[in-house]
Length: 133
Image (cartoon, rainbow, N blue to C red; front, side, top):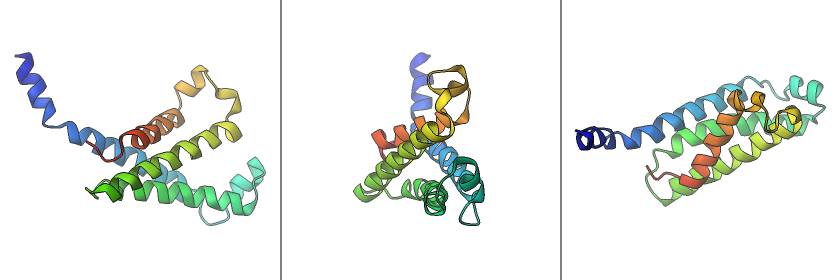
């Protein structure tokens, strides 16, 4: 019975990465798009970022989401490296967000109950795993 259950779910293993890819990608698209038009005044006013850096953050978030989703359909070494690079970009973005926007969150309940930690872990997942299902 256990073998049958395991065998059944083994058939869907590739879907797990696809679901995570779409969830992380869509979250980054929404976060990035919400910062348009450029330069994002909210980032400039609240965090004191320069217009250039604020714009880079917005474009990077939006493009990371789009590229993460589309790179999953490239079943070749290029798709794999693109996925890993986007994973690295997400890890860098999220680390910067933790340092600039939420320095008081490190190793607290707030960190582990926020969506940001899951975006960070998702980026780390794709950095390590690439396109391998």
